[in-house]
Length: 183
Image 1 (cartoon, rainbow, N blue to C red):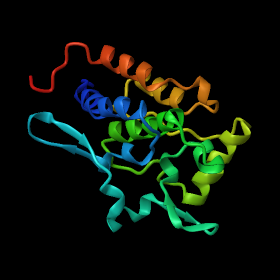
Image 2 (image 1 turned 90 degrees about the vertical axis):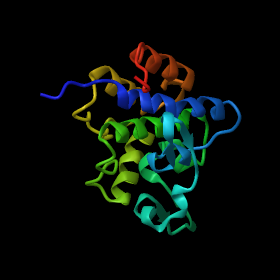
Image 3 (image 1 turned 30 degrees about the vertical axis):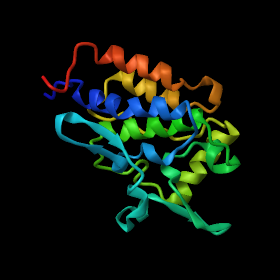
Image 4 (image 1 turned 45 degrees about the vertical axis):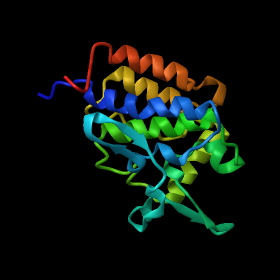
């Protein structure tokens, strides 16, 4: 039986710490992807934007016929960012929830891997219309219920009902209390 420990959450918290700082200055959504997280010696974590430049990750981006020159990471985007072009720290929280899910699956699968990009967009349409038919990402095997509940809070339809980064930060700090990646 696998006993869950919190090093992955601690790493995510370290990755997320710069996010809290950046979210106070300007909105962004693409830097949350795990491919943009660099881990160096001493567990120094940096967030970059180089991942979207590589054709290796072309499958993570969708282009629509209406904007063929603007590839979008639809699997990580909130409904309001995709359909309304409304980017905010709360739409970033949605992306963070997807990234946290991805980290706890050890990035072995793409979010909604069995769905085409068009099906992911249709799924987001259910969030937009609030018709109760949205399919959430499943709880990862290595994920405690309270962490999955946090993810689900990140994917709430109404932005105001989602946690803010400060709340997420405090929650994850409490989960990691006493854990040190140097130990």
